[in-house]
Length: 341
Image (cartoon, rainbow, N blue to C red; front, side, top):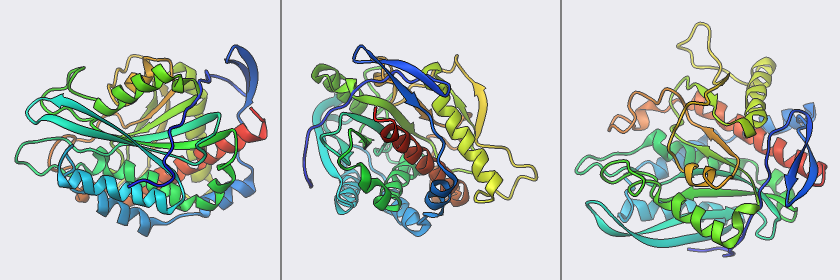
């Protein structure tokens, strides 16, 4: 199923700044100003919420969805229809690859854009396949049904706000990667099928040059996650996530799980330079694309087990994180357009 099918591209911005630093973009230095949302914009955007839709999206995605199965196709069709109904332009990047155990399979990355003709994109991404575990029915709630639902929920909740970016040079792209999971053992050739192929394709086409930043969501949905910064060139953007969380807590819009007397914050100030996490961002990182990797450390205790099901989802935490990502997205887009980069 397609709606407004296009093949589009993006461009590279080295993003590491304090308040107003200059960066080399297409061999020209231009300023990027990281402006906080005004109080009015902050309150207006933060009040936008649709938790029933978020739960329904999780329900539609939360089924075994190993590449090539009926569940996989059903989830793909649901994601595409959801985005088409919201007037996004959707493109499927299809390819075949041979995998261990299951043999030749067709993979399909889902790429949705607000403005197919934009010069630059902020990309929000996750993976929609689930891990092959033989006869076990692995649902992958945090890995990564909830991240998928969060992105669809963002598109719905912010529909009116995002309409302003359907004709702007800077716009938003959502990617639902296929084939993130290994089929037998995590190796360079048995993992990240969709992101490896798409990064290589876009490098050949010059597409990577229009990516401002790729934000990857993974293993989200359980209570009290802890996040860290991993990359120096997006450290200030990570700091915005931390700042938005503090702002939410201070204004009373955000509540933490009830099992903590003194709740910790999700986004930590520490940077973990030594952390080496292989995920769908890796093929893009190797090609110089700026990355924000929103993944908890440590991983949930039920990671890659059948216990990663609906029972582990904490919707208070999930909605808190969804609010932060929504605010971050609008803050980034508003800043980029306001400064005419």
